[in-house]
Length: 108
Image (cartoon, rainbow, N blue to C red):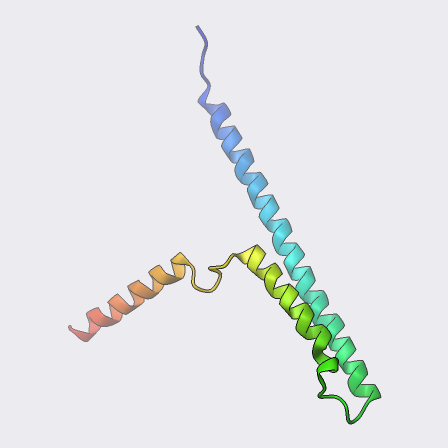
C-alpha cells in the first residue's frame, strides 16, 4: 500500500508560485531599467541638441529618438503590465463600489 503525501503537492505549488514571482520581478526590473535609460539618454540627447543649436530645437529630428523609443517603451510596458493595466478588473470593481457608496449616501 502506497502512502500519498499531500505535502509534496503543496511544496510543488509553493515552488511554482515562487518561480512565477521571480519571473515577474525580472520582468519589472527589465521594464524599470528600460524606462530609466530612456529618460537619461533622451534627456542627454535633447540637452545636447538644445545646447549646440539655438534655432532648430523644435524640429522633429530633435525628438525623433524619444518618440520612436517611446513607442517601443510603450509596447514593453504593455507586455509587462498587460493590456488592462489602467482599467483592470480590480479597478472596475473599486469604481463600482465607490459609485454604489456615493449613491447610497445620496439617498440617506
